[in-house]
Amino acid sequence: MKLFLRAIPILLVSTLSHIARGQVSTEMETRLSSLAYTMVKDSFHLNRIAAADSFKILLGSSLRQKSAFSYPFELLENISIKAPADSSFRIFTWQVVDKNGNSKYFGFIQTRNKMPKVFELTDKSEEMEDPEFDVFTPENWYGGLYYNIKSFNGKFGRQYLLFGYNQRPIYERIKFVDVLTYKNGNFTFGAPVFEQKGRETRQRLILAYGAEGKARLNFDEASQQIIYDHLVVVKHELLGMTLVPDGDFEGFKLEKGLWRHVNDAVKTTPVENPDRPFPVLDNRREKNLFGKKKE
Image (cartoon, rainbow, N blue to C red; front, side, top):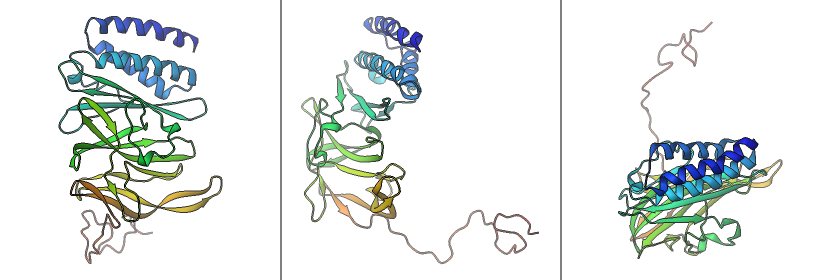
């Protein structure tokens, strides 16, 4: 444990010396990968935090190098790296868990320039009282781990939907859709584009549900809609009242540059004789449900 904590500063100095010479190399990526694995997987929280501090310094420095935007960083398996279809920027996000099981989020945005601009994302979500209705900056970021990005031409020009995950506090999970705008060399998070009858227009969508449940929130390419689970309140033995999916879906569809709410986002059509590519029973009455011969 102590040996690892002492080794991190030496590793950091060595790697920074390569970066100072303008090098973005496999050696540097390997060191980043090792730090990333430790900060996500190590069982000792002090190791995770020490690795996270070094990782942020190394990654931030490497992303500012001349050749960095085209470097794929394929070894960083524990880090989310997302880019829109137009490849105008990339977003790196990651999560660190403290000794109490609480999560903190970190990130960088890297622009596609000859000499990339890098914006550090500072998670202030714990301090935000009403995040659905505010616009934020990289210095005041609603933190999360991004799992999808989708560009759209909206009322305010080209913008990007960011689909993220946040598991703070421990007893609750949050999935959300933020709106990223890049204008005049600056990034902002949030835009008044989510309209729903009877509700104030929102800057971002937030779906909070119980930690034991699983909820869907993503962009559906087939219907070109934002699809999410409809949640209902149930009583939990330990947590009290909590929200869980009930099997129905809602959504938002792009109309005239705004995302407007759809009650029945997913509709099913009954089929009298559905296709069964791999039938089990058919006319073989001598076999059971699993296709095995009856005793």
